[in-house]
Amino acid sequence: MTNIKAQANPLHVVVVGAGLGGLSAAISTRLSGHNVTICEQASALGEVGAGIQIPPNSACILERFGVLDEIKKLSVLPHAFVMRSYKGPELNRQPMLPYCEEAYGAPYLHIHRADFHSVFVKRAEALGVNIRLNAFVNAIDFSAPSVTLATGQTINCDLVVAADGLKSKCRELYLGHADPPHNTGDLAYRILVKASDMRKDPDLAQLAEVPVINYWMGPGAHAVCYLLKGGELYNIVLICPDNLPEGVALQNADLDELRGIFATWDIRLQKLLELVQQTFKWKLQNSREMSSWVHPEGKFALLGDACHATLPYLAQGAAQAVEDGAVLGGLLSHVSTDDKQNLRPLLDSYERLRKARTTAVVQGSTALQNVFHMQDGPAQQERDRIMLEDKPTEGFPNRWRDPVFQKFLFAYDAFGEAEKAWTQLEEEYKEIRT
Figure 1 (spheres, rainbow, N blue to C red):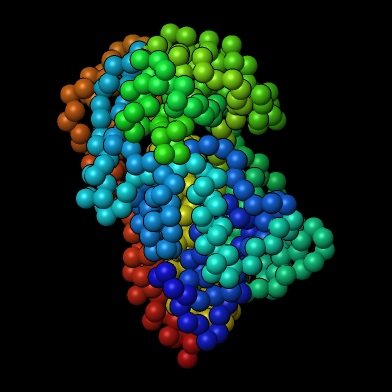
Figure 2 (figure 1 turned 45 degrees about the vertical axis):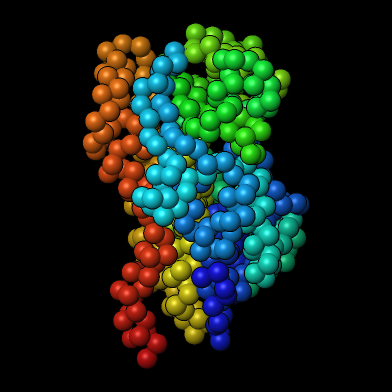
């Protein structure tokens, strides 16, 4: 699918939002032969943040998009997931290299979010996607369909795909009321330190030498750390109880406060935090499950964080948005402008394919709060005993080693699911078209 499919009568699809989910939808839809305009409210393209994880279920889509080789050049491949007690000892390990390629046909990757986004932007532009900046959508005509920008300009199209993130304006227009993000009770510190500084300390040197994902689990908090940028940077994400004021989503961090939270943890983590010079803390928010993502007129659908924002604890948020885009584009490969008044069955199929899966990921991520953040006591001791015993079955606390849940996450074939769904839709469209 790396070449654009020939379409005699292509649709014009407007995608709202040029994040990873919107770009996935744009690339997939363009490869299906349709014309795509992205409306992005920012004045420049780019991503903030630090590391992001690309699991096999997402990596296999990147291969179909024709960008996996470039992504791999910018990525680090972790050897394993390592789960640790907050005091330091290893509790459990899931091998990742070469396991993921052998089991799922695609690697597990770590990359800087800005690098990932840049590769997607370049691919979208190379395919002829029209990316419009300073294009804030403040009204949608769900019947036409069309979007109206803050400038007053109206863009007509055949389908609107809303991928404008957690604080989605499109979601509120669709619902007809305000729908702010929901607080989860946690916040995140996101930090990058130089691996060269770590190598000066014998306690930290090993963390900088062997690429693994280290999880430290402790009372009310956890830490996730891995290498980026060819092993030159160490990405640190620290999750703690949310103490940001109401209405404040981002704030400069007090380093003494941060170090105090982890003052009794593994000495390596404490030493890592001594290398930090400045960081911020982000309120972690998600969305509530919606009854539907598709407007009854059948010319509008939601995608990604705009309809299923999740906590980052399964490292699947971006992957699920990328899957959404792949599935929607895959389905759209079978229709043209001749079908533009009859897209509702296709969009309903997209929702059926994606909604249950994304809900399971959102709920699974939320449930990991209770696994990762156990207070000292019998329940934590039992969790640690099960991990150390290492007899993984369904429900195993290391979710990436749970044989059932791992397969659910990693074995998903977005394009294959779209093709299977189309075989069920095909007869319906034959009747519609006659």
